Length: 180
Image 1 (spheres, rainbow, N blue to C red):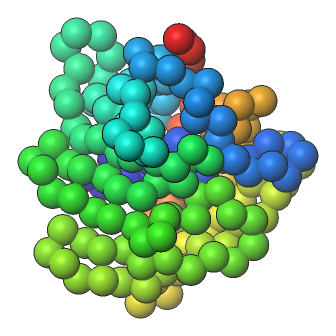
Image 2 (image 1 turned 120 degrees about the vertical axis):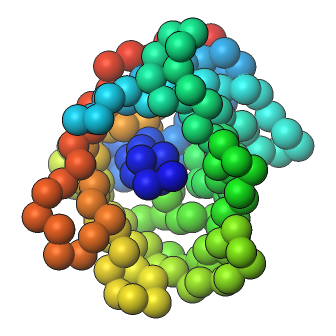
């Protein structure tokens, strides 16, 4: 689940050079594929279409037919994550959303699978190549990262860490995007 969380943080925290931080989710039609790679391997994101007004993506550990399903996430039309579902069905919700697409300070509530509601604040600032974010929870700094972005508002490369004092950053780069 940690790997899925880190990959989702990188994938969904996107911004364009012009400070438009919306991810253009509509450009990723059903069957579109995006592959992100880090030191542990590749994670494949596959657009599945919409459920109501939310866009649905499945995530697989690896690439090709042998990749293992690890979860699903749902986003708004701007790319804000509202829900993640782990392979075992555990649901995490973000109310009103995870603030991935909001520049400045943004507050939301993370509702864990056990029902615990945790207040969070995400602070995002534009950089020359993309963005930098920091996310705070009850225990202070929970995650931090920086991304380089493409014209669709999707991550091309970046880093993240989910431990405030962790020196080692998880570096990720995109190795494939195929839009349908």
